[in-house]
Image 1 (cartoon, rainbow, N blue to C red):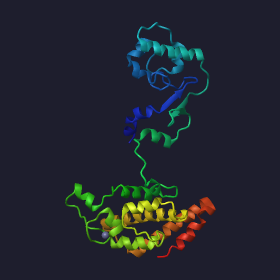
Image 2 (cartoon, rainbow, N blue to C red):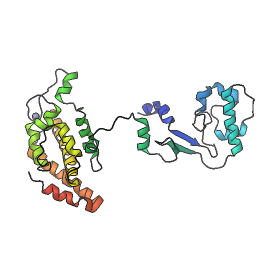
Image 3 (cartoon, helix red, strand yellow):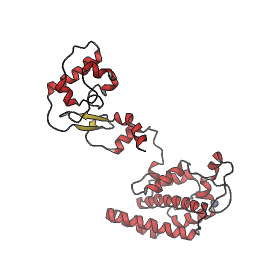
Image 4 (cartoon, rainbow, N blue to C red):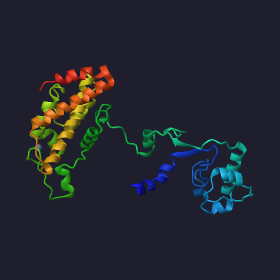
Length: 296
Ligand SMILES: [Zn+2]
């Protein structure tokens, strides 16, 4: 783990800059304090000899000991100028500050994970369903599984066949048919019973039988916001619970009838609404009413 992290140093390095005050805690050659960036990469270890500054020297020490040498090589003259600039500016007794790169390219003292992640990741066009999967009230493990299912990346029978032709592909929930994502979540009799009892009439007249239609319903802004929240949350909880039940059966543990799963899901959603009410008060008062009144 640590070795893997250490191998990423060259990536992390580009997001860090040192603001020099005393220079006492900053490496002259190895830290990113100069406008020229990491000095050792400009000169190699030969630079240490040419400039008379050893590899373990701090910026503070380098400024104190450096003597002008009238270099002919441009890069040495540039480094020399950096040292002279610091000497002219004057050092103080304050701690050097580590700065982190922001999305706009500026360097600031506070580290923000989301900004660094946005700088590291490769960007793709925003998908239309993102709000339906990633919403503020979501439970991360449910949202993550829903995201995997949306991308059709769950280890369903049809996909497992690609790498294991001997795999069992029948559905663990109903023991019938080829197990695909659409089967597990829409066509399977077991999951249909769970789904219709949990969701009730929250969807109105819209039938749940296709993944893209469900995703569309999750981002449809025409419903009351509490209904949209309950729909999104309960659907993700269903995805998670059905997958859990499938895995339980797969390893030979006792199965649960649909009624048990429905009761667990009902409790799970109510608990989530209760915790949101404690956090945000009146904002979720109506959600519990809507949940109890959804019918079955
Ligand atoms: Zn099935």
